Length: 305
Image (cartoon, rainbow, N blue to C red; front, side, top):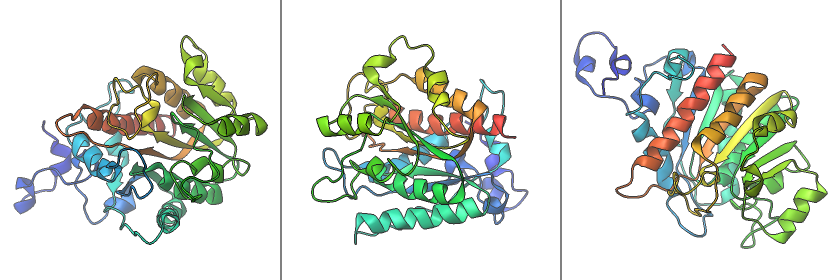
């Protein structure tokens, strides 16, 4: 595949180089970050995963797969890279505590929001989304969180810690309006909490045949939206490369229909794609994750250009 734009650097040594280790293989010149609308933040951390570890390999797998994507999006008839997409180096991992990793993500996200950028976090475990959400809540009024996941992540603690990937939304609920889509694995206590807080929650068994899902999701969101996507929201038939591949998940076009509707009517201030756990010899899930990032950028750039 010829990604000529990523190597359009004039004459000399650079013209003989291959794609960069960046999203879409785009060349990261000295002014790439300054000129970019969107900034990819790879976070290779999975310190609190419990069933199948390996999501620390997710960000690199997504970036490598993205270099094989076509730069053109046929649905929007656009080339999102032309709006500027920069890729940061991988976040440094600390094993001191999960909370410190959340704070590290929050610090980076805060700086990007302050600079007027659209941060895109690639995980890595879902706990790190909390840092992005906290930074977005500080930067934007009337923020809502749209949460795609097989699990509500509403446990108050897990394995004696409130800073676990099973507790992400525990820190959000009651603080920031929350909408959850694709749920199909939860505790009785989490279900009770959803009802107690009147969280708009769309369970997987309810989605079949629900043609107005995009409209119903949008109606529950405020003007500014942060989107967090745990890839296990998707059916394991198309996304087996996750730590907990729950049956009965969303399909490709179903999740895109919601993302498209949100981008058209709300301001998406940032998003993340988390929990890819690459499988040796099976690149399709990596490619799907990369394509999902690219599609959402295409929607955002089209509707907010």
